[in-house]
Length: 399
Image 1 (cartoon, rainbow, N blue to C red):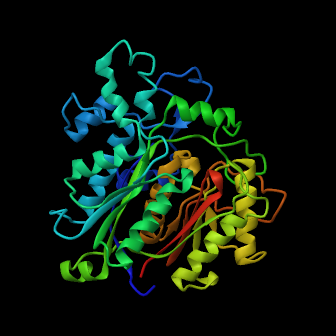
Image 2: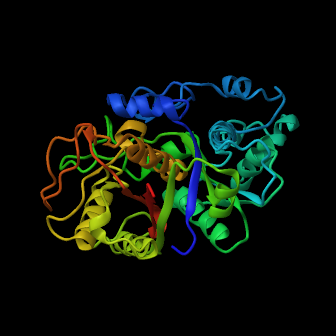
């Protein structure tokens, strides 16, 4: 890349931890966060497991020290926690000192609140304040307001590739001299709407998800928020910043194959990985680890596996694992939390295990890393593929 994009801060809250350190401890110890539903009412409680964050909205409000009469949604609250940690770890004391933006992403938006009061808006007009917080952009504005950010704010919603595209957009804004630093990532809460929607698609498992296993049944939904701070070389040098990693490559493609299914030959995934490698200037042999999208659905894992073989060659695919067995599939936040996990893998020189794997898929000879493994990692390729064929790949590098 002609301009290096430095990552100087990161923040996360997920079902396996309330900050970066707690998430790392869980990844290192193999502790997953998939459990029975406790935090919202649904007829599926006790039968469908999710990656749930065990804080009520009221407890999140208290943690953030917000006024009790706020109309912030769960999506916004989770995003505020993660974005705050990212800004703090980046050592940013004056968020408006440089040209700073926020590119956030979400799929659920304010659905968790609007669905709760759907039948009472007409009878209780005071509940109508929550209608304004329904749309996707509201959570981004709420996070920016919480951070005191006065610069550019934008929202991306491209299903499960959303946060990857937010990260990509932030990098391009820096590369093209529009901004000096950007807070990028995603946030999504669990809701009845998404749970019922994915259940209707028949891609939820009745147990724990098993990525890349021959007998995989489907995914566990999860909720999370994660953000990283991208900064220009100029700001890093001027402020003598500590750099956690670099965003060295990115690519986006759409195979336009189906509304929800990936193409049989993995065309979108193939093109996204190919573009990311081209942008990075790296050779395919330089990739040390792949954090796969790995949703544990029959279609995704087959399509992604075929695409990886097309890129790297038969018997040449780098070591890989899916971390979704830890957190569940967190939709628009997925690429954000997996960006944090990719950086942690490089920092601590270890590959986090693909939990619950037992039997290799019969369609190809690919086996994920199933035990915590120490390894010198210089470049991580992270995949995120969304409904509608929207496929995105990021490459993170140590230098």
